Length: 227
Ligand code: HEM
Image 1 (cartoon, rainbow, N blue to C red):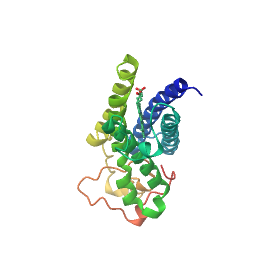
Image 2: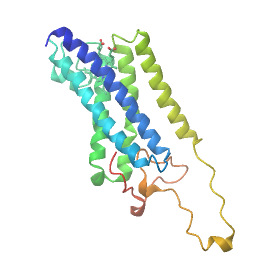
Image 3: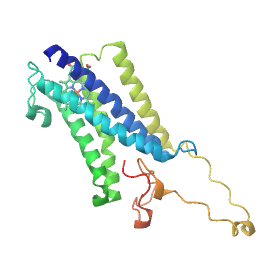
């Protein structure tokens, strides 16, 4: 493979990895909003989230390996694994390395969730936002294509999507008002209204509003498998 081909592949790999990372974070946020219907169960969102995350890691590997394989780019194994080891735009390259390592850490923590427990997994899962942010800065600052209209569209669209979903999540505007309970006499005949369906949740956990954020064993998520 020629140096020119490797160069195109490295850049294309970077963009696809970034697009998939955007999709992964967006799907995690959608899962955390608990939007579901009989036609589209949340487990489906969670499953796609998991697949897209794996694909993002695969394209990140392609991005990095093609840079290492390139005869003139000067990236060795240490330069792509150790932040600031490369003397090529050290800060922006380090952002890419950190984004990659955070993505791997988030993925690994999910694989190990049964061992590390829900609370620790939940904390680590928030690193996905840091991975997204550092990849965004890295791509914009270091990319050859940043000035092109299509690349700007990708970056602006991605920020709009993730920023919008994050705002909805933080403000909680998606929540429908709590259903009114029926009169006491009828209520005894009906099953209790479900509390937060923590046992079947996927994606990011609900925001902790003033509580301890801890969950008992009975509330640990079981359905849907790890993200
Ligand atoms: C999650 C991890 C990463 C993502 C999502 C990512 C994404 C991107 C994107 C979108 C670009 C812009 C490409 C262009 O404009 O054509 C880029 C450029 C670049 N990335 Fe990464 N990157 C990641 C990790 C890394 C790592 C670990 C390195 C290791 C050195 C690296 C090295 C580079 C270099 C040298 C460029 C400049 C290529 C050019 O001049 O166009 N990236 N990256």
